[in-house]
Amino acid sequence: MLREIIKPIHIIIATVFVLGLILFAVIMKTYEAANPVVIKKVPSDATLLVDGKQINGGRTDLSNGTYTVKAERSGFNSTTFTTLITDDVKYIAVTLTPSSDEARKWAEDNQNAYLELERFVGSTTETSGQTLAAKNPIVTSLPLSDFSYSVGYVKDPKDTSGTSIILTVHALDGYWNAAIRSIYDAGYNPADYTITLNKLSNPFAEDNK
Amino acid sequence: MIKITRKTLLKTLILLIVLGILVGGVIGIMEYLSWKNVTFTLSPSTKSATVYYSAKDPDHDSDLVKAGAVDTSSTIRLKVGSYVVVPSGDNISDTPIAFEVKGDSTVTVDPYYSEDYLSKAFAGEIEDIDNALHTKYPFTTTSYVVETGRFYHFGDWYATTLYKSSPEPGEGVDIYGVILHKTDGKWAVVDKPDIVFTYTANPSIPTDIVDSANQFLYNL
Image (cartoon, rainbow over all chains, first blue to last red):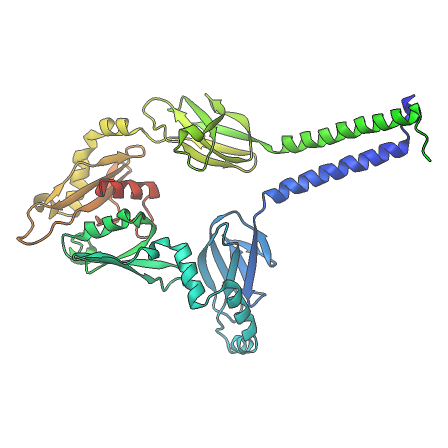
């Protein structure tokens, strides 16, 4: 009786339907694990390596975390930097500065590309300030000071993105610990930062022995 | 016009049942695909380990839900997600160890020694540690006070503090932290004693040791 009811066409339709559902399920599971990150490069054909792996195209999948990015192209100065991918920062933006005459000519003729990237990243003073504070919340609490110490910051010149800082600490002898403790008291971990202890005469430093 | 006959109803019912079975099968496959094989390798000192689903703050035990347990190196199935594993055994730390399951993977459970064990089992190393410090910085032998510090990990890391014993009149006293590491049976000062340790200035020191040394230095 079943043979009369279920015809071959029904089996074909059901099979195609099931295969389609399985394919959909596998694709969804694969896509769920992905974390799309936009890639912007100037020049656009620069070679980009993320943690040593070459990335092609304008998009890749990276989990949130810290990555080492290297970009290079013939005629341009290569650059290597660390970038943090978070829920709020899902892009890697790289600009290369020209080193050869040909590259300089290209850069002059393609200023729009650099400007476009700047607009994308939003690197005006106000936006970079917002980006700086977003990446380094401690700046909103600085300076920390009293009569015996002060804790401030400067931008890290090694970071071309302009969003990394160096904490600068000045203190009277006998008050260096108090200066560092003020960072803890403000709710931050000094170990997270590059710190310059200005004019600390560390008796254990090589040049002081 | 479709005549609703008994045969038509039966056909429709069978079709619905088959579709239901197929959809159920697909859901079952999706569910199966979300579970991964996770192999736990326990260190010899770890007698057992309990796996919990990880909440946003794994320090709040009330948020943790048990996901499984192992008492030998073995494999269990876990869903993709974040977990912590709490080891149990003699002289080992029961600090939760966080891990992520993204696919079939191996998790090595090799906890450090417990604080209690570290404080008792390695007290005999203090003399060698002091000798290493004074050898590198001879001026500390007579003019500095070196406090008793703490051991970390497997008793191969040590952090303490030191300060000038007799500062000049009007001179303030700054307390320095110092970290030593034992390799090939010898203790040696890592980097230099300092007012504070940071991850960038002390890349050769494990970050948890950096934090612990700072916490010891600042009584946190």
